[in-house]
Length: 459
Ligand SMILES: C[S@@+](CC[C@H](N)C(=O)[O-])C[C@H]1O[C@@H](n2cnc3c(N)ncnc32)[C@H](O)[C@@H]1O
Ligand code: SF4
Image (cartoon, rainbow, N blue to C red; front, side):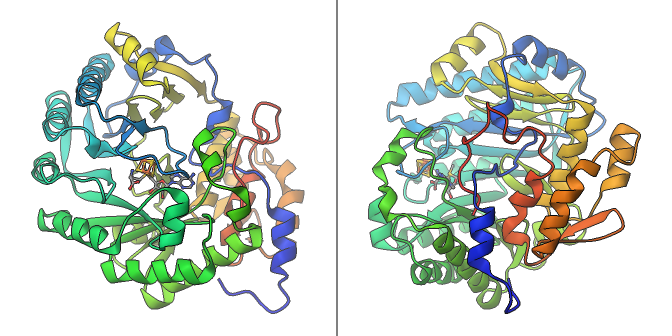
């Protein structure tokens, strides 16, 4: 980002740093309640229109190590019998979902997330994919993505990934600096990472994503730039750069990270900018949305340029499917009617599915106002132009539904974060790192007692 000389970054950061969601959904997960349970979910599935293909998300909450910073729903589970049992429950849920739909559905995208999905055995991975193919019709060009921990990928998973038809692998790196790695409990050499990446390419996986993080203990502008340069040597098609969300009140193991070793808001901002500039200037990557980078010509870059980018629980995607079905413990589905999240704990999830009930424990049905704000927030987070009056008319039949947001938008405009002509607003280049703050002004739930202080810091 280039700021003009008059821009007072420390003052802007001081003003806009706060606890704000990442808006991978709207309303956000803390607004979910038990009003949406298994019965409501079954009705939603039964009413799903099947004229367009669906997407699937499969969550595997197991890892071979527990990184101190991790905010995902996962745990170290080494017992092969527990992993096998989970795979069987997942297959049962796949069959249950298929049976609840009004017909046989087509699938455009599958995302295996976690945790570390490859902690399931090679046989289980292949068997689960076969179960999906048995119950659904995969589109010929379906994207099948999987998250991988490069340090823990046994050799027998490679032929399994090939048999599964994986098209994109997402590798966690975070940082190659040894001091940082020690402070986050995650040892991972550049060589190990390169070797894993080469093996994935050798089995025909054409698209590789690498995850980096800033705001971790002991990171500096120099250290994050050094990591970014090492990643450029690996030439992944995509890079995601996440700001460390320190939420020890929700993730107790994050207490292993001493607060005193964490950079402050200004330090985080500088690290984020430094990674961004390194990837753009030295690697030729294009910034996509809040935190993704992709090579020119990559489907994500092209979607961003065409205004066809989407945002879901996995971040940014080209996935335009109207419904995402989540399977596995804690998985969240996004259906036309609303969001539905499975029970977080594996025993609760397992007990429900084994009793032939959906494991949905919470969610939220969308009102017309939610749909309007969801659409506007997604457009903001994708960097698209938003026509507030046209959107309001489309969802609520009147042009002034979002007028209450205008004073906040005008304040953001005065700080150079947004610009507008008429009722069409867009984030400026300077406003990009503050996208969440812009999105937040459309959030009707923010600041309510149930959700206050549950998010990580915004800068
Ligand atoms: C499921 S993990 C990645 C796959 C694999 N388990 C691994 O660690 O290599 C997804 C990504 O989430 C990001 N992440 C995890 N915890 C985070 C946190 N507290 N704040 C921000 N990003 C986080 C990391 O970049 C991580 O690579
Ligand atoms: S970052 Fe990956 S390997 Fe580490 S605990 Fe989280 S999901 Fe597991």
